Length: 311
View (cartoon, helix red, strand yellow):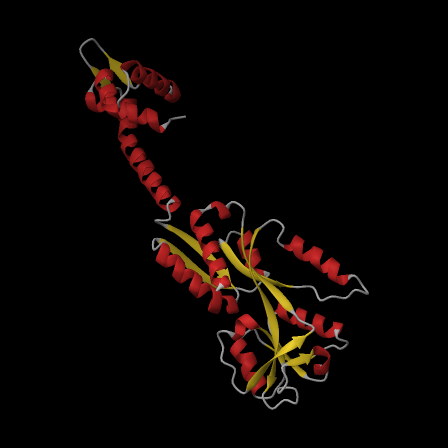
């Protein structure tokens, strides 16, 4: 195998015309140069130099290797400099995927802070809900995934809460999990609704309502929470677009659960938010792979997402 250090020695010998002159240029001893040339010739399996009492010149193989050495060493130097820039956060790229309410609240502040601290680091953003976002991370299509999972709804009579907790832990067991915040769902009612004037609403009190559901994971949690309250919700509309949910509720077409995080970036019109009991919460996290967590740009992105969530 040809090593870069041997190519540097060969190039120096070719440029200076002797082992001793090459040794002076490289800052080493003449025997060291001679030894490395022997190793290189053994590696390629053919002589690279012709030595006579009056001169030293390259063989045809030596000329070919010197010609390629310049490009190889230049490319290696460029690669070393680029890697050093990435390691020092002077450059780098992070591919981030996030669910919509995270993209509109946590992500902007985090990326603005990241750009201010490390302007050479570029971040791209794509929207995707879990579990698709987590699949993208495992498939190598992103470097950081902003995701969420719902807390299990307690049901002591069946032990389902404990089983759900184990399943949630296994879901991300192979990933690095950076907890960000706990997001509580709020009820969204038309402003003229009979329960809109109160601060708190029991889920059971909404058994006869028409419901507007969100993404598949959110829809599953809605059905689970309602069934624990003793009824199956009648879902007439389904959309992951939060402004659309609010518009449908405001038009009196139904009621909904929405994460508090989603409400931060949307102004409700003709709708009122109420606290729902029993509480329904989701855990917001940033995920990455163990090897990616050691990449400086990825680690810096995780840190800024954590800071944004703490504000």
